[in-house]
Image (cartoon, rainbow, N blue to C red; front, side):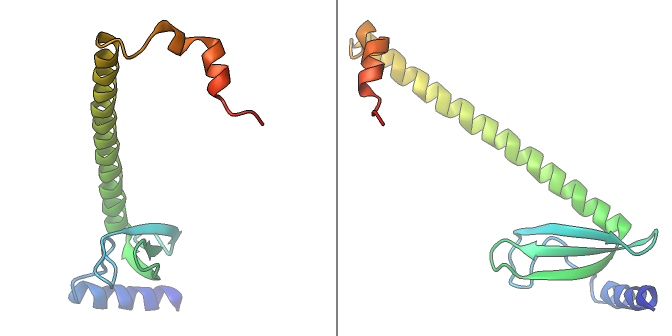
Length: 125
């Protein structure tokens, strides 16, 4: 019964353009999968949640479309990690340049790095 209902729903969604795994009904693209449950070898139930409006919904999708969705998510995570690494390198380069400039203009002295000075500047509890 549940399998037949899921298949009918899936056929209707295919005719209407299929379920949208990457967008919410509010139009946001900040959607993440919360739970995946299998129905059979070709269908899966997935629960998705919107990060902007906090709506969640359950969909019956093909395993193939779910695999594509997961690949897209992995690719986006890899892109975000690469961008984070690039931004961290850029920030580190600015920090190093600032440190070099401070050393050149004698704004820092060896005493600034002594253990005694560090202990005095640390708040006591």
